[in-house]
Image (cartoon, rainbow over all chains, first blue to last red; front, side, top):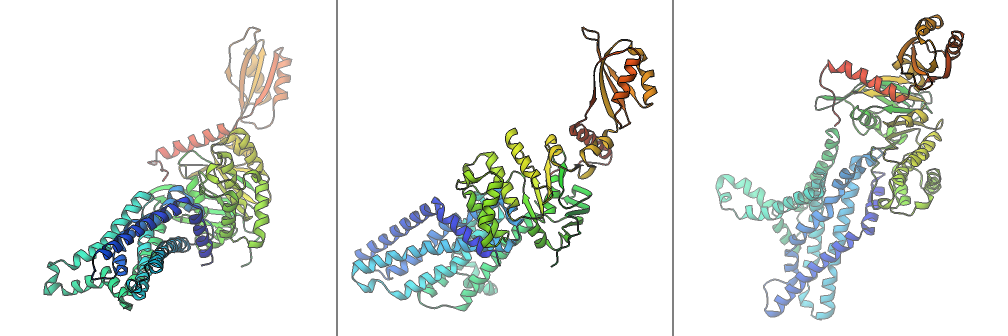
Amino acid sequence: MKHFFTILSHEIRMLLVSPSTYIAGVLFLWLMGFIFTDILEQFSKAAQAESPVAVFFQLYWMPVIFMVPLLTMKCLAEERRLGTIETLLTTPVTTTEVVLGKYAAAYLLYLAFWGSTSGLFYILKRFAGDNHLIDPGPIVGGYLFIAISGLFFIAIGVFSSALSRNQAVAGMMCASMLIALILGGRYLGSAIWLDREALAPLKAAVEYAQISNHFEDFTRGVVDTRELLFYVSGTFLALIFSILSVEAKLLHS
Amino acid sequence: MPENRQAPAIEVTNLVKTFAGVAAVNGISFTVPRGEIIGFLGPNGAGKSTTMRILTAYLPATSGSVSICGYPVATEPDAVKRRVGYMPENNPLPEEMRVSEYLYFRGRLKEVPRRKLGSRIDEVLELCDLKRVRHKIIGRLSKGFRQRVGIAESVLAEPPVIIMDEPTIGLDPHQILIVRDLISSLRGRMTVLISSHILPEIEMTCDRVLIINQGRIVAQGTPAELRRDVLGQSAYEIEASGPLGSLPFLLGSIDPGLSVASEGEPDAQGFRKVTLKTVNDDDEGEAILRACQSEGLRVRALSRAQPTLEDVFLAATRRSWDSVSEVGKPGEKP
């Protein structure tokens, strides 16, 4: 793991000097700010059942589905397309270090983007002068959920980037995998044919993998280790497959 | 781990690499002693790049053994990677980095100690004449500069073995000259393996040449040895006028192998161009000249034709095409 930090700091540096990072950051904040103002507007018109913070975090999947592919599609696909993976892997660096370094850099950027949305809550608190709108519990729970689920989402992005040398293909693959994971679970959960007695174990499995249920638990302050395990094991699996996929492509190049 | 000083820089035995059943490299064996510059020649798809990738532990071999400075590539890839500086084909570089940043990053990856790295980067920038562009972004550099960045990067960690895949491709003659001098300056200090199909290039820089075709070595040796082994004859060109009919008999008295290969038409002054061939490698120019004069032939010019490496290369690869065309389908480049 000697070179992990070399690659990580190199990746972060490249992200910081690249204009596209800042453009993506601005667009992300713009979208999140728009959503946030919209929620507050709804709230000011009529009393709502849920707090604005909860509604805000419920829409987490929107930025996830478009931001995660954009952040990760480049990381391995670009190296392969340019051929720089060859110069990279002929130094005393292992594939694991390369994949983990790139993964960590993308994850940190993802956290930084989400972290910037905390400014919205600060502005609300500072200028609304009304503390009942902001409940610290759901905010902390919401960010915790974002941080932990982000591990898995970014790992899926890195994996799809390892599958193709074309960035566009990698991005689309990542987006469809995320949609299948987040919205597909929700769809399966409400499917009637799963309610049969014989399919009960399958139903239980689907319930376990319901990302929206995890989210609700987190915002209510319940941190279930089974849910943590879901994300951590998913992350490990996706990263192991990314490493294997990079190596397999070398063998069959 | 003690470094084995006696081990040759590169040792390849019966190397085979197949891609989906098609052999790209088919039983190559060669040894390169330390400090030698060796040229790797072959037509496109001959297996040059594949062999180089195996030598750098980037691709695994199908069978056979490869060791670099005594370290087997298959079992100690890390030790091998620490001892090899590699510049791949087309020299891929990250577009958006600055030259000095790139070299710093590569130096860290190659485990050059942080304290030494700064001065080492200055050294290679100086060596490759890159000082002027050290703060430029690589994507904006011209091809010649990019190529030199690649070379600077491969010598950065002072590895004992340097492998460069077509280092002069796409350069203009002036830049080729600079790159050639650069490679020559490494002679004795580092073992350099370069591939190319620009033949004068190889002939001028390399101590030894390996010609491969169809994944097999078809000839190896110094350029002079190759000329003799592959072409097996030397040629003389003579421009003379007079009774040329007596020439074959005359030549036989000098060297029984010497014969007239072709005879040209006489020009305005009555001189003809005659090509003579012999299997004998000694210089027979003086004997030919004396014999001609004794017979009353007027000689205007006599020269010993120097076959170029190009002739050798064409002859060697043609020979190997002939031998494999019966065996089966030619190997393809992956």
